[in-house]
Image 1 (cartoon, rainbow, N blue to C red):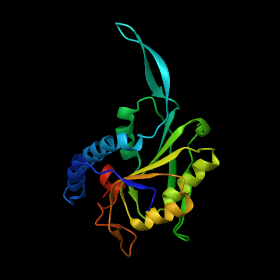
Image 2 (cartoon, one colour):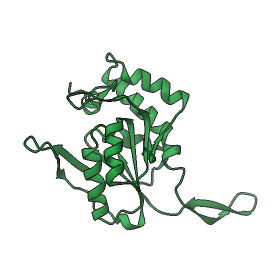
Image 3 (cartoon, rainbow, N blue to C red):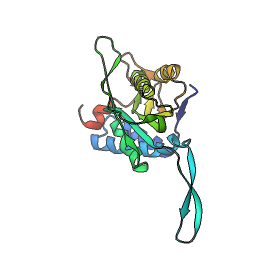
Image 4 (tube, rainbow, N blue to C red):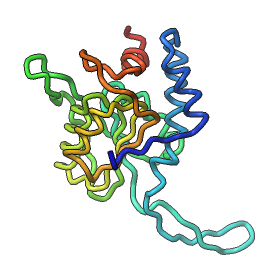
Length: 208
């Protein structure tokens, strides 16, 4: 699991423990997801390219650095939406595209129902957002779709991940670094991450 980066920080660990609690309210769940996401942004963006720029302070001319490329955030619907605002708080200039995926009941494979990503990915740094990397199916398909649209600088951010999903994703997209707040034990027979946190989408949007 060479490409997975577990973002280890005391504040993330604290918020994640609260997030996992089964009696965490929907309101608290949303706030904690936002907190964790904000705390992860520096790690996810640490390798972004910068370029020199002229700066005029109130006292004199100097040089500074700006991000070299535009940022595109791509939350995987619907659960990925819960992470978008945390990134936008620190990257308000980012463009937000969306990919909607659902599982086909017959094939059990992910299928696209909302490919709304009308962006020039070839010039951008693109960050895929999805709170849970379980089997890896949705992440693999989303990354494939973005590469078809000429995205070459991709990153994937999640709150928790299962080793099975990480291995599956790495086998097909070894060039995409993965960032997660926790690497959990694994999947149960139903394909849920354990110890996990339940269904992130349902808990974020109050549809339990």
